[in-house]
Each structure stands twice: as structure tokens, then as C-alpha cells.
Image (cartoon, rainbow, N blue to C red; front, top):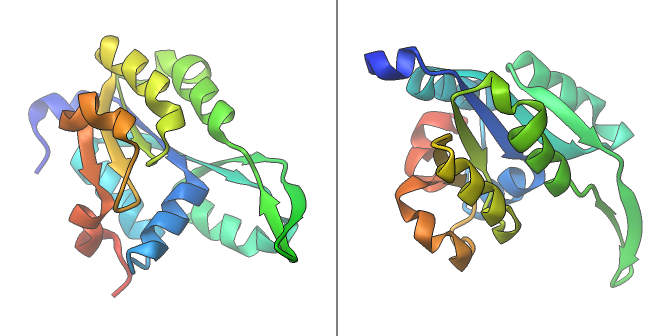
Length: 168
């Protein structure tokens, strides 16, 4: 049950899509994105939830399912490269996520939840915490950046909420 205070708070969620996908997978969590969106709505009064993800034209069905589950997708162009003889695709979303959380959407929310385990976001976390806008850092991977240690009170490991957001 959400508190009266949380009911009046506008929360936005910013998700590093690849970090969430790979982090959940590495822990044996098969995410149900509809359940995840409902959890964020009921627990934190999340009005908007953004997933930042590299664009792969072969994944349009997946993207439409995420939108149907209630997420707003922010796509980045991908770069294709070869590593160890394998075709790899990378869509660097870090700057886009920071830009949305710290500028584009900043005046539209009271609290922010960010899904990532990447230490590159520490400057964003420090900024949001200093402004009283950081609600949670949900870490998708078992291990996360040591740069998060001063922000330990904000950290919620994905594993802790897995039963509520995974497929049956």
C-alpha cells in the first residue's frame, strides 16, 4: 500500500535497457515487463517509465510489447562491430538517459528511479540526491559499481523484487 506522501509524488523511472536485460538474465530472472511496470506504479506512483535502448530493426515486436506494457522507449542508433569473430551491436544510451533525467524531464517529476549498475551514472545520482529528487537506484546486476557506496541508502537490488516482477 502506498503512503499518502507517495500518492502525491510524481515519480519518473529511467531504465538502462541493456543493463536491465543482461543483469536480470545473469541472475536467472526472466522479467515480465508488464508486472515490472505495475510494480513501479503501485510501489512508487511512477507516472512515466522510460527505457533507453539501442535500436535494432529486427526487434520491433519486442519494442511494441514494451510500449504495450506501459513503457516509453527512447531509442539510440546502434553501432555494429565485430569482436572475437562475433557480430556485436552497441547502442550507447548513457548520455541520453542523463540528459532526460537531468534536463528534458527534470521539471516534470518529483522523484526519480534509475535502473542501472553502471558507475558512469554516479554523477547523475549525486546531482539528483543533492536536489532531493533521487528515490531509488535499482541495480540489475548482482554486483554494481563501488562508486555507488555513498548512495547505499538508495540502492534496491533487482533480486530483492524479482518474485514480484518475473514471469511465472
